[in-house]
Image (cartoon, rainbow, N blue to C red; front, top):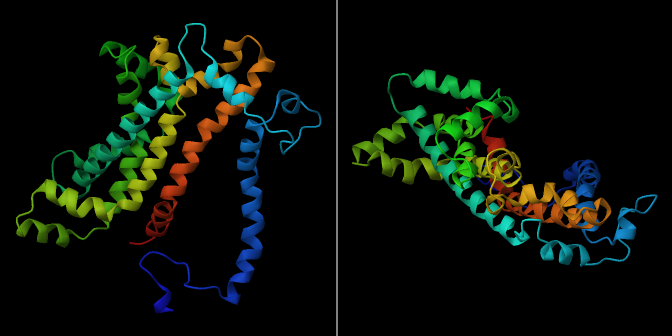
Length: 292
């Protein structure tokens, strides 16, 4: 058994008959859970007659790219092209995910391994923040953004989403498991806090970083609230907002359904890609969460 263990990875080196009972359970579950993904792809390529067919069809019979062509050729009443919304979403998402990782890991390192006044209080405040859903703080958030002059700017998309209490909490729990002796040894060798953070902390919390990257990505990529409440300039709004207004922009809810199906696929693909890339690290997060 020892030869089949590789760090935190629990999969055996080769197939064993003892695994059959697990496959009998997992394969049907995998097929069942994969059906929505198949439907999203199939639905995006359906022509109008299949989109409104009764009874509804799961698989497309006559696939077409017309929905995507109409989507990319469409501009709303202000003349802003779809590509502009998509560009805004990509820029905002990249910046928010990168800054969220830096802020969460740096703050977690300070709260876990540094000693200073009000340390426990700050962590308790972060824990209390986990209880609040975004809609509960929509009005205070709007007043704050208005008072500091961030309305109608890219910063309105970025700054409110940088605060990620669950990310800070998760990374701190990981860093708590790093022995203090390792940090002290690095300090005795002359390492600064920056070197300790960059060379020791970050490599050891990669699974937690992958998890908060996924959570942050989903939060910002699918965010409609900012474009609706904080941004009036149409050229600064995101693709998620554009997608939510497709039917009203076309003036025809029937014609808009094909473009909405194509836009749903475009919204879904980045989420799928980032999870596929980082899923092994996420599984390691689940494995480490029970280790003390």
